[in-house]
Amino acid sequence: MKISVSKNDLENALRYLQAFLDKKDASSIASHIHLEVIKEKLFLKASDSDIGLKSYIFTQSSDKEGVGTINGKKFLDIISCLKDSNIILETKDDSLVIKQNKSSFKLPMFDADEFPEFPVIEPKVSIEVNTPFLVDAFKKIAPVIEQTSHKRELAGILMQFDQKHQTLSVVGTDTKRLSYTQLEKVSIHSTEEDISCILPKRALLEILKLFYENFSFKSDGMLAVVENETHTFFTKLIDGNYPDYQKILPKEYISSFTLGKEEFKESIKLCSSLSSTIKLTLEKNNALFESLDSEHSETAKTSVEIEKGLDIEKAFHLGVNAKFFLEALNALGTTQFVLKCNEPSSPFLIQESLDEKQSHLSAKISTLMMPITL
Image 1 (cartoon, one colour):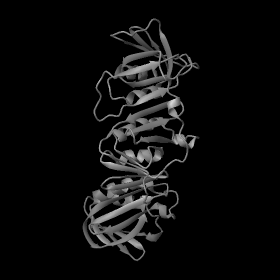
Image 2 (image 1 turned 180 degrees about the vertical axis):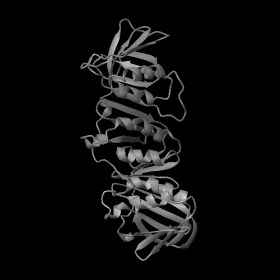
Image 3 (image 1 turned 45 degrees about the horizontal axis):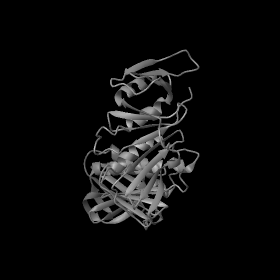
Image 4 (image 1 turned 90 degrees about the horizontal axis):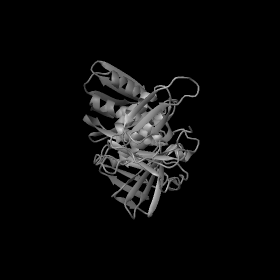
């Protein structure tokens, strides 16, 4: 193998691959990036068997095709230090030589045949994603998911495909809150009418870095493969039964309040400077915010005037986790939000105002949250 490649193209590709390397054991083939030159393309791939990425860049010139491997971390360290001009990569015996002008580096290769094969699946479900809705839903629900949850199935995001109605439900929870959305008019091809999979949070975060729109998602129930023109990504799915979240959702709510999102965000941030929990009091023309701290005498208070007034006879008190409430508000694409409540000790819902038109590129996220005991 002997080729010339753009420094910038190679460095960008290597940065994407770093998350898929085994950086603890340099003697493992998983610490290496697999390189293969076919015609005018350099294919690069990295995998630790649970997750993997394959991509390509165009070569500036190709004198000889071939394959090789190189320690992925050291490869990036070298390339990032070089100047912004073409780089020569050449295999010699059991080494890969990196050259640029008067600089030269020689690193040992492993046997390329030992590199794990990328999986080829027979999908039970597949979708073509041509808009940012799915990635937007992933981005907004990701904060809810605990990557180290003691319940394996909760360490990922649920994707529930309904071929009959062509809808995709996306759900995440950490048991204290639950965020969900339903994407409609999704072109689903499936061997079953209803099928679901649980995507690990680690995989979810990598998808957010690599994909936006115009990609395909396929799954055989054990693996998921996401692919676009330049990247092929795979991940093992979480094996387990996701809780029936529909049973958790209240069938109805006693109260529903339409409130200003930015005013609430600002007030919660002010009070959360002293405490992670806040007492929210809703009155007819005011929303009051007060920090909750039982150990110290420190307090923070502020209020927001509600111009249109709420249909409420007496003050309604609610204890909330400030971080969770802010993340729920940040997931909304409207300037107003709806707060739906039953008793102060019951779960409450935060969702977008149906009376307001949202961004056409934004997924509609609803978050059910457990209150803090006052």
